[in-house]
Length: 120
Image (cartoon, rainbow, N blue to C red):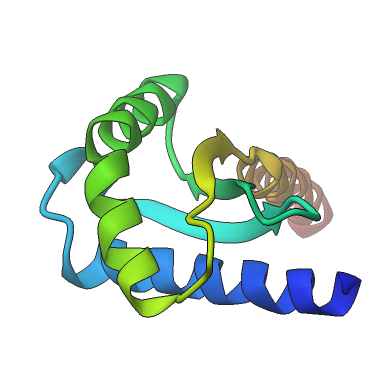
């Protein structure tokens, strides 16, 4: 049963990603990347994790875009993912990618400073 839930969650994440790319015309969702989805054991609730590169303002815009497009996304996705019960979906921000980019920038800045010191 757990394996089935994992496959269903992966399918939902892929379909939401395709829906955002080809169906949704909301400019607030332009730079959004779907990371993962988790679905409850009874398939009634689904969390969809997304990431947005940019400041906190972009995250808030994306959340408001998801809130206004939620029913449309749900309709498109679950016309392709056929389940007995259509789960309630919730979008959550995943900040791990932004943190990794910030860490990478710090490391690159350190390396460039160190390189300048060795060149002198």
